[in-house]
Length: 466
Ligand SMILES: [Zn+2]
Figure 1 (cartoon, rainbow, N blue to C red):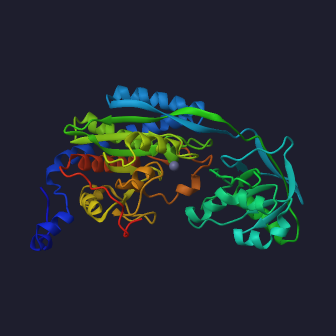
Figure 2: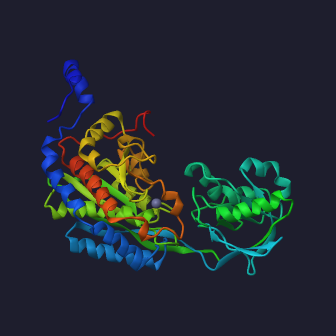
Figure 3: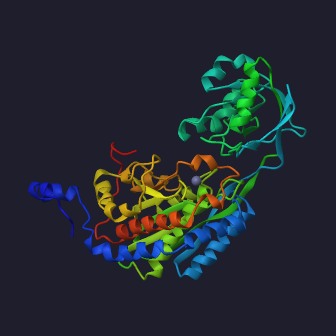
């Protein structure tokens, strides 16, 4: 049964079929139970805190990641979820080692730093060199003659993540092309209490592999001021970073099998791996627990929707996306059995809405669920409130490329980049009430899209979306 607007009724059934809207009435009683139960429960927060406190951060290839996976698999089985399994994934293993940076001239002072993921180390004893501070790749190009033999510091203020992160990911390659011996980057974050932020970086074949690290925005500003006064700051950088052979990890899968079309899947996604600092809960253990709790809640309430609702806690999002690739390969290149995928990877703060990338037809169908989640959404400058165009996630990216309608659970993430990939990504940044609301929203989306008779249509997203 579909709710049709008057205009569509007048236009006739062909047009109406292109603009399906879900009649929400049949789903309201179950959704009411889902949301009441979600909001009465602090299990999501408790489990997030347990993962952060007991296992700590979880870099790909680490024992702590695998220990957390073992615990979650046991808990999911105890929860009574179905199809609980660890899907084997070979992941890169990067090890930070001992590291430090120090200003040695014109004054001597320690710098707060974090090596970038994937970086090579320095020779024993470190690298000591004069620093060239630049504010952009263009400035480096115009001053390339000064860069040879130096450490290049990219002191680039945060604008957007996509814009600013280029200096973290490509800074070492561009600095090496100019003959630099190491690269430093101002941490990618929009607020700092002298917080260093790590993250992945890459090398290019044919370009020298030089060590790369982030320093805090405060320390970057210090070096810039020295250079502007006519001094040449000199830094000693020491990094024990190395890459070891690939290690065996797992995507964690737990589900409720569909009662009528078990082969059709609504996917709830997140990533369990994290950087090797802080507790990795804002990015992204919190999102994982939201996905997991959404499935557990449906099970606990005895709800078995028409289609399968599956939580996948992906491994290796941060530095390889191997988990996402293995999962996509496991479901076939066209992923045709996946009807909808939603990822939570922006911090489980108060929910703001759901950003959707889909065909026009699929988007209208998904958007018609909006009234059911609206009461739990807040206003935020982080994202548009409600069900909006544009969104997805790294782990569901390969599925979306195959045409699966994808979405992101948007939250009031205005402080997300304060802690992202830093030692400040800790349990206290999240709270039980907001996490419970995330569960209410995600479980509602999952339930309705798994229960409605029509499946969400697949296909390339329309130009109106991202
Ligand atoms: Zn993440």
